[in-house]
Image 1 (spheres, rainbow, N blue to C red):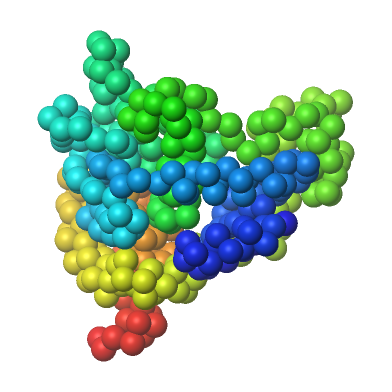
Image 2 (cartoon, one colour):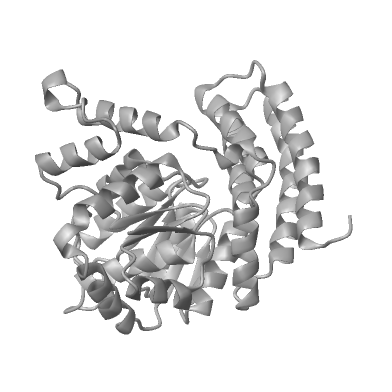
Amino acid sequence: MMMLTSLDDPDYLEQVRAQGVQHILRKPITQSDLLDGIVTVLSSGQRSTEPQQIEETATAAHAPLRVLLADDNETNQYVAISMLEEAGHQVVAADNGREAFEKWEESSFDLILMDVQMPEMDGYEATSAIRQREAQGDSRIPIIGLTANAMKGDREACLQAGMDDHVPKPVRWETLRQAIDRLQIQSADTGLAMVEAVPQETPGDGIEDEDVGAVLARLGLEQLDDDEGLDDDEIDSAVLARLDEGFDSSDDLLIDEGTLIDLQEMERRGAISVHKMFDLFCRGVERILPTLHRALQERRSEDLRNEAHALKGNARDLGASRVGALCQQLEDMGRDGIFDGAEELIAQVETAFEEAREAIAAFLGEEE
């Protein structure tokens, strides 16, 4: 059984699991999330009681952790720190990979949450530097990568860089808690800070060939078998294409009310202030828009990419879906060194921001 929900209340979700729900998807969901969930549930079978037992063991073993959070985005930092501190953990923040490496050297931590895309030194480089230093005799610290997407390639890139797990942004407490639980279970005998590198299974890794066929059949894709010579990536693409039929992307919306409802629920528990997030978002946009214009005028593709990436993160954290989608396009253009059409796209971002600001303010009951 799989459940879709907008709620992020840990007590409620634990009750749901106790009733036999095997997999929980947090809205808004992507096609990748849905496919992973379907494969996980259909492949669980006789192991249906195992996840509950594992999660109970992990949750019972929770102890306050000293966490190093590496993220250059102020809103991301605020949300992550608020969630972790609500759970009783102590958090130290770093604004880039180089600062994270220096703070790791200077102090003792139980866990690192590492954004993969940061200025000066990105998360992959910082992780590599930490692992190289550990090879000289330091104990291994678990590192969870934070990425802007939930794609299979992002997860694999994190593991190949030396990270121990992966959580997509915007970060939700349920997803982060599960990742922390997995690391605690792996290090139950030696302590979290002594965790050994263990390859993380992705949903479906343990499925036999006939099980994959059953999954495809239930999705109406039973014709996609090995006899047709399709590799895994082609099958994945075909499955996602089928799932995409009639699938409404939240990026098509001006704002995603599901995200705002989630944030209000967190605010009700005292974890965050949605109004503070809204203020951070508005101030961030007003700071970043002029830098986008300058980056375009001076043909600085890296700055265009980085600033668009930062604004995308702020927008998606608050549910400003259209702003986030437009910034993703700008980020892609900056990455590819393409400037034609960027001016029009920035103008669309400005329009979408004004519309989103008005819509979010109305949703929150604020006066413009």
